[in-house]
Image (cartoon, rainbow, N blue to C red; front, side, top):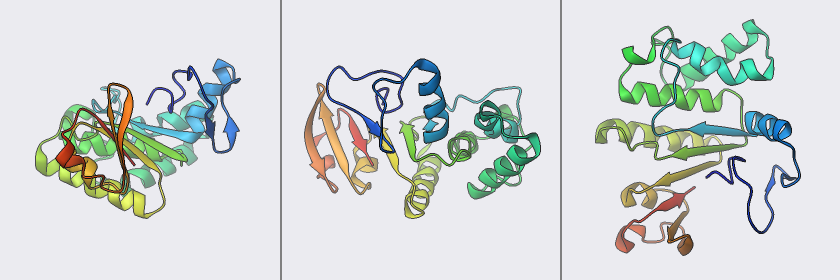
Length: 191
């Protein structure tokens, strides 16, 4: 995830994101590419506690220099897209775990990235809320979003169109469904 998210550099091979080889880019350019091309969805949400949901979602657009009125409109639209139009003014401690994860997803989507990286997005959620998030990912995928999901949950990985099982840093299974549930689950990268 760190290599794909441009936080680490590969020790071998090459990585092209949206057709651009990212190997020789300086730190500022990498930060700009990350902001424009990649949406991060963290297991622990990473929301600013004193900011409202809409302010949290606006944050990537602040770094892009998007004018206030436009970024507010885009943040509100992203929150509506994840079903939180009635919780925009609420702070993270006023939201359930599932609602916080939806804010994190809206924040990842607001910049219209080419790639969404989701690290254990259902790990801190109860099963019903986790199911809501999985359905939302399915809807996003159906709308054309590329989502790379890392999970230790075999049932979640088995629901993805493609699942890659990694053990000790090596790919041990790859394919649609790849019968990951039958293999056990050290770690699965699903997309």
